[in-house]
Image (tube, rainbow, N blue to C red; front, top):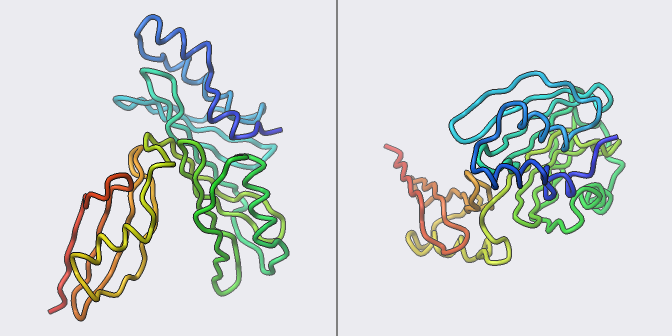
Length: 231
C-alpha cells in the first residue's frame, strides 16, 4: 500500500538527513536510493538514477499501483525537491461519476492541509478527467484524477521555498500586468512552481499584440515580459 504523500513528503528520511548535516557531505547514490524508497509503495522497483550537479533523479515502477515514479532529492540535505507519478493506464473516463467534492477528498487524503487553486473537469472528444491545482505547506501540486474511479492518473509535486501564506492574489498579479498595458484582454493568469519558487504565469493581448509574463508571487516583481506583435 502506498504511503500517504503528506507524511512522506514532509517527514524525510530523518536519520539520513541528520547524518549528512552532521558530516557536511553529499548523499551517495545508495543513500539517495534508500531515502527515495520511503516515499514509495513497498514493491517499487528501482529503474534508473541520474546524478545531476545538486540533486539525484531516481525512477521507479510499482506493479501494485501500475505507476511509474520520478523523484528528485537534493544531494546536500537529502530533501525531496520534486515527486511525480504517472499511471500506465492514464486515460480519463467516458462519463463523470465523481463530484468536485469527491475529488477534493481524494487530494486531502494525501494532503490534509490542501488549499485548492482550481478543480476543473477537462474534456476532449472521448475522455474526461479532473485537473486539480493546489497548495499545501511549502508545496505546490497538480493532480490529474479519473472522473469515474478516482484514480490519480498523474501527480506533479514540487517543494517550494516560498511561504504560501505570503503570496499575492491572482487578481493582484493580473493588475500588475494590466498596469503596463491598460485595457488589455487577460487570457489567463495562474500560479505555478518554477525551480522552487512560486510565480504567476500569464498571457494577455491588446489589438494585434500579445504579451506573456511571469510575476514573482511574493513581491509582485515582473520576472519576464515578452511582447509579440503581429505584422
